[in-house]
Image (cartoon, rainbow, N blue to C red; front, side):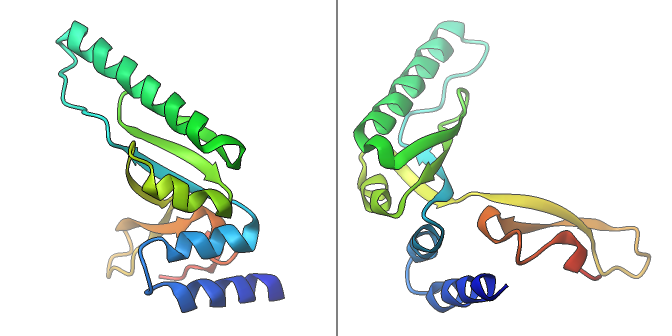
Length: 147
């Protein structure tokens, strides 16, 4: 419990200092962190244009392989998506700067989970979603949410 409180305090203390600071703090505290990576690969072919779509998909797969090869053992693929230029990676703290600066990477953001909960509505029939980073699930469980 004390470790979770210290981790949460460290994350909150660094939350506003830079775009990737939160990811860096989580990676250093846990040894690795799950992130979503948007690839800088053109993604504009229509599905009904089969040849263009196949060419685009092949380019996306090549970009995913090249990124993983370039970053080495400090990064592993959690999930590859073949129809959108995004992939989920688990990275070590040492790989964050190389990932962010890589020419194939358009954006990096923390991977999280969507947890449904009841909204504070007068009829209590409204349902909404709250975003909890996967690394802080223990800190914010769905049972702790009260409308």
